[in-house]
Length: 407
Image 1 (cartoon, helix red, strand yellow):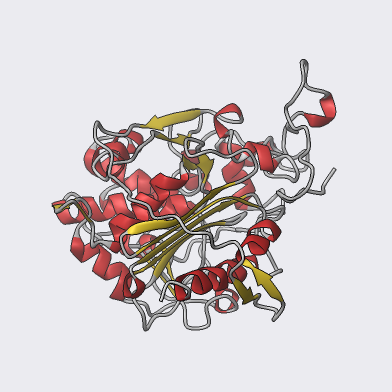
Image 2: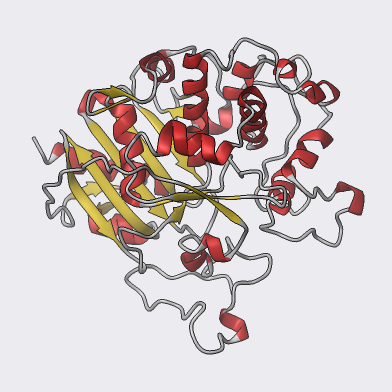
């Protein structure tokens, strides 16, 4: 069973019944496979081990002035006419929110999702993790120019030997890491195995099966480039970063994120990380949060790191994301962002503008655009990890159309 269903279609009875029929139970190695991912992405605490990132006592108010935008028309990236509602349906949307000029103008939920539902955000987790690193840098607890071995001496025996913390943040180390999502022998598959999200395929040698994410990090001893010579998107870099952060502070990353970011920014709900058997957070792609709380994070970045006049994230960190050294990129990602770059685990759609994005597979997006006073968030359950059908571009075109209609 590989087909998925759109919100406009009859939903599949996934995990329904007493008992649940075998054909509608989550496959052991299929949490991200359609149609099951339309359920699992909102229920990851039932799929894997997890640890809560606690909110604080106060909630950052998000005023709203909701508008009916469903019929706003625009063109897809392929030149076909569509509407906001049509685009959301075609791109397997679970929730969408647009914050513009200091208020929420769009907030919509689908596929059983509610304002309190926590949805996996996949690689948008990287941007949250790096932002906590930005707080540590500002406090002097972490030096981005320092070698990674200054914090984790064991990395001297890996391909990260000689790399700096900043090169990890920018994914410009030379470490080999295969990010092929549909290959059972790829390193990224091993990352899921280490996190307890998959079982080892029969063809994987037993001595290559990582028990934890630290085991996987230590196994990566092959380099393919000089550190700093090229950009290559590799999820393991975020696990290395959070390991460095834990060593630098003597604190586990889950409470660190709660105390440094999630609580101070006024999250409305606890978030949670998928964790491995050692309790290590899957910081590259295992975070789960509500739609509104991801919008709060976007607003925090939009408002220069402040909440109600209090500096939560250093202004210098945000300026570095927006206007820092955006010199390296690769051909694969120029398809989506011809003038794009990557900095501090954020995507820069156009190096000549301050807009920046958090992106995750299967359709997780946060766009922060200071020039338009805009934050746009989308949580999805695409049937594929990466779409060749223009799903991301169609959503960005739709956001542009909604914002243009405000003037």
